[in-house]
Image: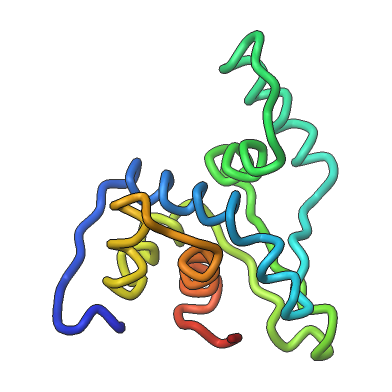
Length: 136
């Protein structure tokens, strides 16, 4: 854990909000490492339907549906396309709740203070999927 001796305790809702922000700002960043988000098409469609029922009259973005998938109990998978699948990893909503608070304190502060960038988002995504920053 790279929180410089601090223990961070975030609510589930806060962890989800930070992870959602990271998905919005960092998914294209992690694709540069040869990683691609993959999921079941049927699960994606079901979660989109669930999101639309909860948010009538609104149009979801891709990341809205990814978060809904996690909330619906499905997994998200980062598929490694370049290293024989060595870095393919799946997560659940529980991983988001447990691991966002393990993100480096400097990156968390940037996100909480709305001074974040794609690098901060990248650190969140990598920490949640891999427990550490592996790429970059």
